[in-house]
Image: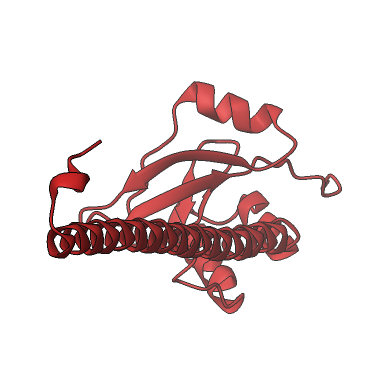
Length: 178
């Protein structure tokens, strides 16, 4: 067959032991490689899944906080009164609105700026140092048509920090004044 019959017994034993040793070593190496690969894949899968769940939970909390702030702002009658007050100038309205919003305890880490735009297209910023680009007409029309908050494009500041823009349109339903 392989010429084992012509070999001496010492050579036969040597080749048999070498073959068994190599075969068992290769088998153990392959088994440990497959087991290690499965363990690493399972660990990586669980790690990625856990991080995605944490990100989802954190984003859920942030979006809920932003929505709750929106509800708080929309239900604040003082804001409507200041915006509708024709006796105040634009700078006075801006100062009063900033004062009203700062009394609300808005989290500056969550909110970069709040911009209130009245029917005359005057914009009043909560954060006076921040300059927010005005949305174009089609985006304003989309906000006015929507019954829910509209999430805009992601914007980046000069430092590269990302900002998610959320806008919500509303109309004043206060009683008419004589």
